Amino acid sequence: MDGQTISIDYLSASGRGEQFPVLAADCLRLKADIVVVTTTPAAQAAKNATRTIPIVMHSLGDPVATGLVASLARPGGNVTGTTLLASGLAAKRLALLKEIVPRLSRVLVLSYLVDPIAAPQVKELESAAHSLGVKLLVRDIRTADDLPAAFAAGGKDGAQGVLTTAESIFVVQRNRVVQLAAQHRLPGMYPYRIMVDAGGLIAYDAYTSDLQRRAATYVDSILKGAKPADLPVEQPTTFELVINLKTAKALSLTIPPLLLQQADQIID
Image 1 (tube, rainbow, N blue to C red):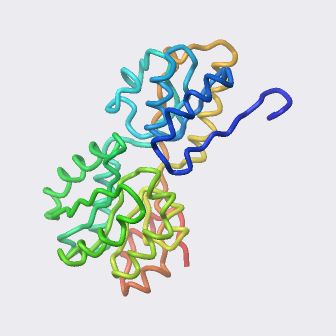
Image 2 (tube, rainbow, N blue to C red):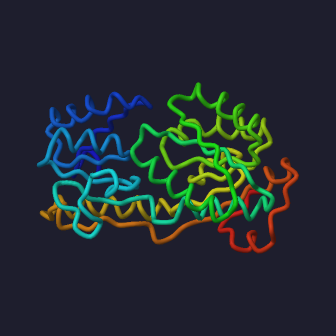
Image 3 (cartoon, rainbow, N blue to C red):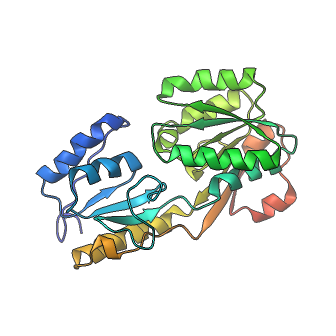
């Protein structure tokens, strides 16, 4: 328990990515036995700061593509943990949006390209878009202030739906994203169910509660002597489809019955 068998220090960049190297240095100053990270930039900063203190990833993006580990099966080095992304997940979200809006031909894609996990997702979406007959309108979001202009540009270019890639900025700014989608009457597909809880239309999300438990087991194993290099990175195996019917009605959308049957949760 925190304060009894273990001491936990919570450090936050408060949405300011440039603070991660400072926080990584703080972890060393605090003589941390293990560093747990929840974003790829934080993990990279931690890895740059130390190659000896174990680093546990908690539901990160693509740790192989971003150079955090050598492979999922054999991570090597001092980094291991859980990844939120599975191959084909971005493409699956685009296909689901197309299923809800059959005439979908242009999609506004909001992506935080500063985060190294963003580009692989956009590449996957571009490949899927070609086979689905959809044109992507990709907008790079650096700060919350970029969101209104991105939606305005999407509207001008004829967007019929909006999709965000899976970066933490969209969780932090979920209310603003959802409000702008409603304002522009764009059906939205999101990578986090919390965005549907905030009023978004649909989310296809890895079952994060399971990943949270798994991240804790990594910490436990390492404290008992296991080496990060020997602990394979775990991918999500369970996903949840969440649909907000209230939002669908506001957009005058009829959700296909088969999709409703597949939903893990429906918000009325």
